[in-house]
Image 1: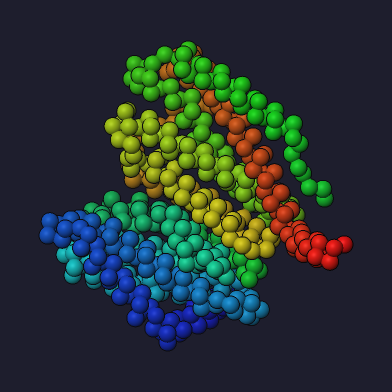
Image 2: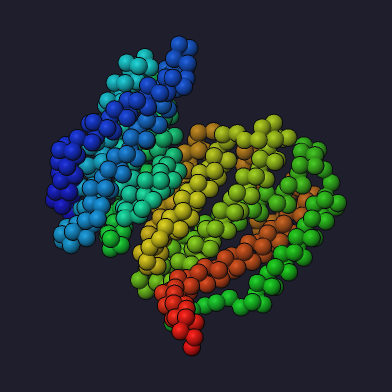
Length: 220
Length: 247
């Protein structure tokens, strides 16, 4: 399973690296969202600094949608080939989710630099920020990969996927924002309970994907 | 295996029962029940709001259960998928009613139509989760593919409910705690309020069951129509041909 996961993740990441969609489109989009937030909220009155953690995670969520849609479109029309490849479905799920998580991690670093530079945010507890990012990324990638597979091969996928994924990912947005707020304010103790929510979300959706992805692939 | 179709008398009985208990609940809620000291006339919403909120959860619970039964090969029947779809639709309607009746109560009591309280937020997210599920059900696909997809989507949504519950509870709580025990009268309420609440629960449960059975029947008819669509289309073309040649 782990070997298959590494193969699929390597394939997806190679395709992304060659197509450069993540670097040329998704990353600029994420930064653009941060800039647009500044237009919408008055940047001179400290609103951006106060809301930095929430805006950061909204930008991550929107970028995750794009990354997940990209991941699903790699096999658009060729899902049968993946199904007939003999790879373990759980491995395929972990590989695809892993590739999405890797892209999201890079985007999160970029957006993190963005909020420090553009919103003047200061990170007081790096450990909590990193822990929240790791858990939220795993959860978002797992849930996103599952829903992308559900919406695969559907003409209305681009509009259906946000409707399916955003409500499910709402607890991640909430918990990650609260954890970051605690980390930015320098109260890491307040953020630990939110890590439990992020951890529970990640465990539930990774476990569900490992068990249920095979059934979804049969639909291809 | 024979497919189950609910008899017509069942829907009639459920409808009549819902109307009868609904009238009794309305009489109790509007005339017998007096205003309370804390909430005045708005306490009358007790007849409607807790029952619709509970039944919304019941609807999503039935959807989850039917989805599991569909996914397990031994119990897999198309009827479970149809029941899951019907129950989710009725659940979404009751969830919407919960939000509306809650807002009507919240405006005078809390002073706002909406507030980011834990239960309200969780309920709104639940509403959005199952709207997505219903959208997925409308996506064209072969019946088995769609049923399997929707069953998995329902389980993903249901798995999210406890996480949403804890996240929003820790976030903030303004809503009063669970003050109603379904199995025994509430000590803080007078007899008229307890009777009204019981009548509301019975009436709306019957209405829920009536709508569920009706929707299930419509789902079955739609499924049958879908299965027979090609045959129907072919027969129509044949009929057109017969008219043209004057047979």
